Amino acid sequence: MEIGIATFITDEGIRPDVLAAAAEERGFSSLHLAEHSHIPVSRETPYPGGGELPRVYYRTLDPFVALTAAAGATSTLKLGTGVALLQQRDVIHTAKEVASLDLVSRGRFVFGVGVGWNREEMRNHGTDPRTRGALVDEQLAALKEIWTKDEAEFHGEHVDFDPIFAWPKPVQKPHPPIYIGGAGEKAMRRIAKYGDGWLPHAYTPPEELRRARQWLADQGREDIKFSAFGAMPEEDALARLAEGGVDEATLFLPTEPEAATLDRLDQFAKVAESFRKGQQA
Image 1 (cartoon, rainbow, N blue to C red):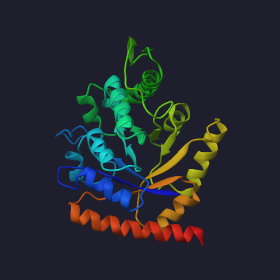
Image 2: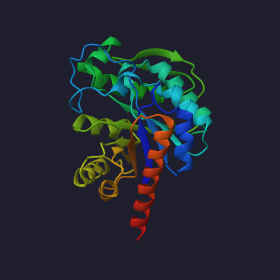
Image 3: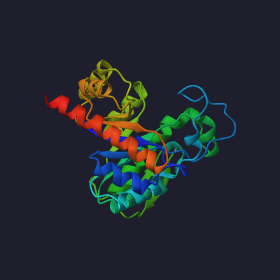
Image 4: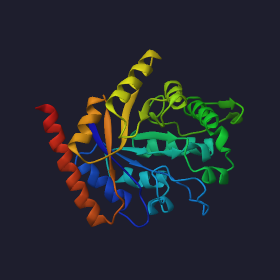
C-alpha cells in the first residue's frame, strides 16, 4: 500500500513547492490538495465534521496553481486534487486546467473530484444543490469527450456545447485517472460508470471497503483503485486500511508554517517506514 499526503494549502502555511519537494524526498507517493473557491459568510450548511468550520477552509489556494508549483519542484510525486468541486466549475476551463497540469507535470496528475457539501458555496456559482449529482455526471462525461476527441461536443440536460477544438490533450491516455469521492449508492454508481478510482474516507471500516470492492467487481470494474483520504498517522490505522484492500492511504497533514510542517513530515515518514516494515515481516 502506497502512502501519500492530503492537506489544505493556504496563505498561512508552507508553500506548495516546498511541501511537495519535502514529501517526495521522504518517500511519499502523492500530494492531494483540497479546494474551496470561497466560504459564504452565511453558515447555513453545517460543517460535516461538526463544530466550527476550520480556518483553512476560508484560505485555500487554487489547487491547480498550487499543484503546478509542486510539479516544478518534483519529478516522481503524484499530484492530485482532493477534491476538486466539479459541480461549481466551468467544464471547458476545467478540461484545460487538467490537461495543462498533466502536461507540465509530465503525466503525474490525479483528478480527484466530489459533489461538495456547502450548499451556499455552490449556489453562488449558479449550481442548484438538488441537481449537483446529475450535473457532475454530465461534466465527467463531457470532460472525457474534450480530452479524447479532436472535435468534441456534448449535449445533455446540464452541459451542452457544439463541436469545439481544445488543446492540449492530457499526457496520460486516455486521460488522467479520475478518483471520485463520496459514499452510498449514487456515488458508487458514479465511480463504476466514470471513475478510475475511489476516494473513501480513511475511517471506512475494512469490511465496508471489501464490500465496495466486490460490488464494483460485480459491475465489471475490478480495475478501480482505492485511495483512502485523510488517514491518521498511526500504524494501526494504516493496517486497517491495508486489511480493507486499499491501494493508497493519504495521511492528513495539518496546515502549518514551513518548519513545523517539515518536522511533522519527518514524524509521518517514520510511521510510514515502520508500517512498511511491519507489513513485510
